[in-house]
Picture 1 (cartoon, rainbow, N blue to C red):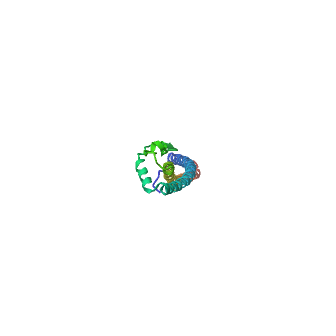
Picture 2: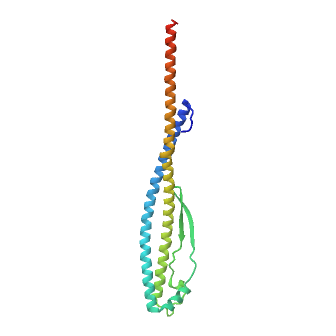
Picture 3: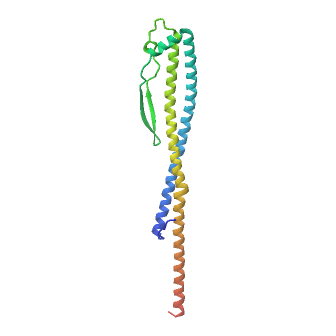
Length: 210
């Protein structure tokens, strides 16, 4: 324990520090509880999004297999080259209980048959179905990515908050309490010593008849 001044002013200061540290710990615990609720909510969304992505991916693979079987691999490859394009995403940040989390704003990837860039003349409908299936898969990927990024940020903040709670609970507050008790004990000892000296002085004066 570091050397502390054994005065009543210091005792009052330690009591105030303990109250402030305990208040801070309680607020952090409330924040951690709120973060955990949000974490579980987002985790449910991630699980649902993961299931949706698996279904979309499976459907896209089936649609691709149908297209290759009906139209041929070369026709599918030619359509894929023709329909290439950029995917514009606008990534913003939102504040969730003090945590900055990403918000991905996007236009739906799905396009009309005329908007995919290939000629419809002589094009098998299975190719168009495969294109739509893969666009749906990309939509699912982007939605899941936002939720997973949010989950990661929340998990990191929960860990930071837990470390601060543990530091207050197991290090700072016990040290302040020990210092408070040390000061209180020193003051009590001093008070008993002063009382004893006064009693001895009174007895001495009485013997002298003063």
